[in-house]
Each structure stands twice: as C-alpha cells, then as structure tokens.
Length: 463
Image 1 (tube, rainbow, N blue to C red):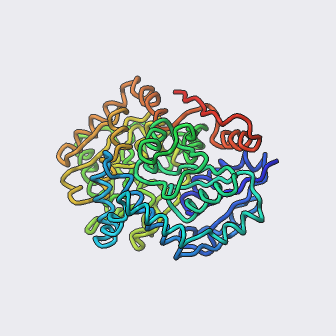
Image 2: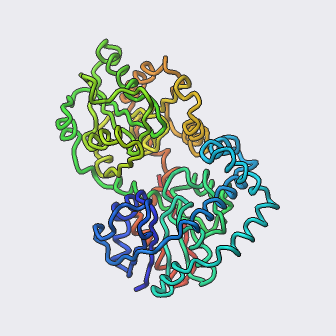
Image 3: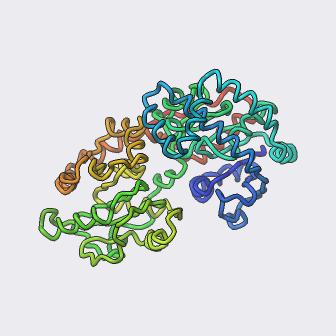
C-alpha cells in the first residue's frame, strides 16, 4: 500500500474530484491523505463534512500566493505571445488586471526580463516551509493535485517534486486550462488531461512534454457513464411538462447576457405557434453573471418555461449576491440532459456535455448583445471552442434576429436518428472514453508510479 497525498485548493476541485467520488477507488487501494488550505477564501467547505479517510490543513501565505500569481501573469503573457490566442488573451488580461498591472506583467513577460524576474523571485521566495514540513511528515509516494494549472500549490509542488524526486501528477480541471493557462515555474511529472484536444493544447501552449501527458477523460463527467438516476418521465412530470412535446433546454452562461429576454422570446414563439409542441427548461449557469436591467425570472408569468428545480434557490440567492457560486450535482445534470430533446446555450461547457449525451446543440452568440463583453468574446474565439465548433455538429447563431428560426431548425433536427450517434462519435477527441472509470485509471497510474516499472502508457481513446 502506497501513501498518496492529494492537494485541493478550490471549491470547484472539491466538487469535481472529491464529491464526485473519483478518488474512492484510490482510497480502497492505498492510504490517501487530503490537504486543504487553512482558512482561505477559495475553500469554504469544511473538510470534516466530506467523509474523507484523513485530511490536513496547511497555512498559506497570502504574500507568497500573490507573488506567485504575479509571476504566473507574466508567464501566461509570455506563452501567449505569438500564439493564435494572443490577441484575445492580451485583451482579457488587460481588462482583468487593469492598465498598470497589465503593463508591468507585459514588460516582465519578455524573455530577458522574464529570466531575471524568475531568478530574483525564486531567490526571494525560497522554499515553502509549511509545505516542506507537511510533506516531510507524510513522506508520500505520490502527490496528486487537481488544478486549473494556477493556484495556491502549483508552483511549490513542482519544485518540491523535483527536489525530492517524488512523482507529482496534476489533474486538469477545466476545458480551457491548457490553452489559456501557463506553467509558471516548471512541469509536473505527469499531466492528466481530458482528451486528445487538450493533450495537443498542453504541448502547444504550455510546452508540456507530450510523453508526460495522459488522457483520462473528465473527472466530473464520470457519472455520465452510468444510467441516469431519474427517467425522462419522472423529470418531466415533476416539472409539469408533457412527455408528448419536445423539451428544449436553455442552459445559461456565466458571461452576462440577458437570458430572461431570450426565454421571453422563446415563450412568445411557442404562443404564436412558431415553435409548435415545445416546452422550455431553463438551467441557469452555476456561477452566472447578472446583467443590469435583466428581469427576475420568477417575476414573469411563464406558460411554457420552467426552471430546473435544482437551480431555483441558487438563482434567487444570486440576484442578491452576484459573486455566489453554486456546486450542482452532476448526477442531476446527467438526468436532465438525458431527459431533454435539444440544448441551446451561449458559450458554455454544457454544449460539450449535451453532445456527450447525443443531444442536438445550438450555440447562441448574438453579436448585438456581445458588444464589448470581453470575457464572452475571448472564450468564443479561443481555439478550444473553435475546435469544438468546427469538429462537432454544433449549430451556430450569431444574430438576435435569427434566434427563433435557429431554435426551430434545432428542434427539427431531433427527428434525425443519425445525429445523436454522430455527436457521440465526435466527442472522444474532447473527452476521452477509455472504457474504464477515472478513478480506476488513477489507481493504475499510482500503482505504476510506485512500482517504478515502465512509464504509464496512455489509455487508448475509444469512440
């Protein structure tokens, strides 16, 4: 039995990797210790409530984290320079950092200044005493870190692994991580990504050695391998929907669009017979952005539109607390996606999730509304989304005037029996489908690393 230490530094990683249960096979085979930052705003869950075999809290220096983050910004700009994503990432960082901070990071991103900056930073920061002390006590055989490739532990874990010759594996969390992030200080021994697309992006944008990248699929979508826990009939009955009409899921975005206005247009089209025999299910994004002037969903007397009941309480709370983040149950999401007939959404990962379920999909990106919405423009133009739009049968709508007709065409496509299978065949490029669960693949990886036998071989991707 080996000892595996797992570092977690954000609520989203807790949801995707702990609450999903993907570490449970590892816990049955090895001693697993979880490490969380002590009293840090990124983690609000009490680890004692997670039913873990053992966990520890580690103090985090905010000054150290700030300095690592500043260096990360400079490195991300250096990696983006000359890439196909440069224009949009530079605009995004300029907006999010502010003019002065962006200028400083831009200057420090040039090769010569970045080299001196890195040398000075490493000398100033030295080793992370808290992390060194904790890992000296635990003496792990393997370190795992679910991450967005930027955070409280990333750089220090890479340096610790190099000094102690202990394998460190990063488990990629989000679809855009390899194409929008940067490895600030070096590389882990292994990087686990979703599929061939993110493997290619990790090589292209991060500079990660190709032979140290593994495709496991997405931890949070592992539940989609199982039968849904509720039938279509049960979900529709609970919502008050007819099982004899087509159900269109409008899945919201985090990008601040007037989604209630979109829903009102769909309601009007159904009422006028333009979208016949149709009903609309609204699922707000779990960290939705609120736009000024958008009506409260619950203030509208809907006839054909319902909200996903799992999201109703969060939606009400988000109207008062704009920064609130909800952690939805992917088992419920699986049941909803299995029950609906088609999905329309602005730029959101749920388009890929719907394709995994074989559901016809429409990306609604109205130029009239996007305007100066920099975050929306950045995401829709990044190569991870462009790949999706060109390699998956995803319909695109770029104008407000064409929205209803695009939805009508989408609903008609539900009658094409070949489309569902075609969508499923297109998704393994984005989400590997190796035939075994994410948790089982982690066990295999740890076993190989501990035995120091031949290097882990990437599992073949099946359609």
